[in-house]
Length: 281
View 1 (cartoon, one colour):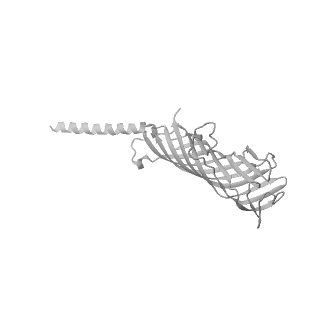
View 2 (spheres, one colour):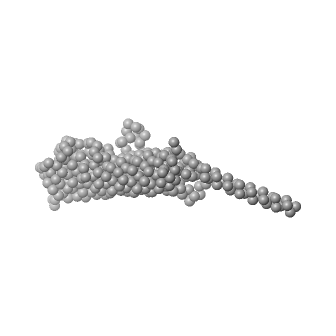
View 3 (tube, helix red, strand yellow):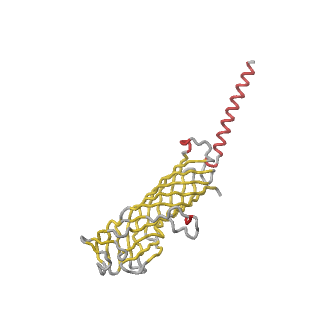
């Protein structure tokens, strides 16, 4: 009987250790346990806020600066245009393609298609000169002008395109939510830094000149982000991000003449919701 109990205890210990080892193997073999070598792609939309900025306009017969100009975005709202290939540039969108260089870090390239609209009919301080002052219903006392449409319309609405490279860290925080099988649902925290070029299509009408609307590499930008990623069934995810950054554009085209340029710099803040997929090739 003594030997029987010893043998039974041995079998129980062996079975327990084997079960634990199998569970560990299952966890280690889960698709979501490792990220190295995976690609991901996402598509989404954004809302944007901008700080006030000083905008300088230069040309053959003018050189003036408008102080603390306000601007806003141009949201489309929930719309089928986000899915229509022929109209995808109409809403404010975010496209990203990336690769995991190890389990926690990824590199990506992306385009943040924001929209920037100068707020019309605001009084701002002006410093400088331009031809025919007062002929655009713009003059105000105390060296101020009213931003009438006849005087100036100024938009990066197709759009304020931030074409950038991004380096990010990803951490699985599913255990905080007591999620056991991360191949069914996984929660990740992500943070990153980005830098790139500004390639806006600037829509401008200045001092009664012909409206100009063309793409042009105009400057550079940098950004920081933090986000929450929820991955479903290993391959599909929903991600929310908060992204802030700095934009400096010193070569904005404003008319058909290369002599006419504008410059400005400002900070931006994005709220992003995107859907995506993650996979190995």
